[in-house]
Length: 311
Image (cartoon, rainbow, N blue to C red):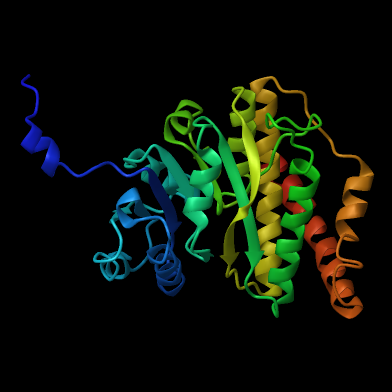
């Protein structure tokens, strides 16, 4: 095969450094807000691409992505409704970048989000990074409780990560709405587990396999996204029931992998429920504490329901 000429090299578009993958399902307004935030990134446009992976929305989202075609290098994929893990994997399969950056359609990354990841990854090409997520709906107590839970889990599982990304015998936990990793290693560990149909524990399973493969993963507080997850009480309970189902799948996969099952001590749950006290005004903290207690009851119900279904 003949080598391309210098002129051909000059006109060939340069591959981006980062491929941003966004799974989406039937949230066009939220998706537009996410894409608007990506269009304002300080990283130059030719350094990243955006891949929107439509998970079988009733109304295709290409109409939304086309509005950003002049401001972003953007691709829109569509698949049948198979869940966010499969949608992320489909996007990652089309990625041209050296790195993958995952966020969700209800998130709005800070303007320097991608550049913060790039700075941290410079000189550490095999490193995976989990950023910091903020609740953008502070008046919504269910959304607040959901983020408080994530903050607690990040502190418990990730705070003791040392300089080589290993921490206290605990597997790191990073949510898929703010995650950055080299594409070759993502593919090497098999991507997100597609037999997790919900947005529940599929990211935890990926992080566990990442560490199991001997790869490094660290927390990067400066890579920030705002999470616009509007939750009602019933939505909050459904979310945590799904988390319980995901937790059962996660534990089952750990056993199948030969890992020793890990059961957190009772103080883990005690400290989780009372975590808001002293971190916000008293009346608000009591409501959030009650919501966290409800979340754990819903989580346990989901866990045992899934165990019965797979018995």
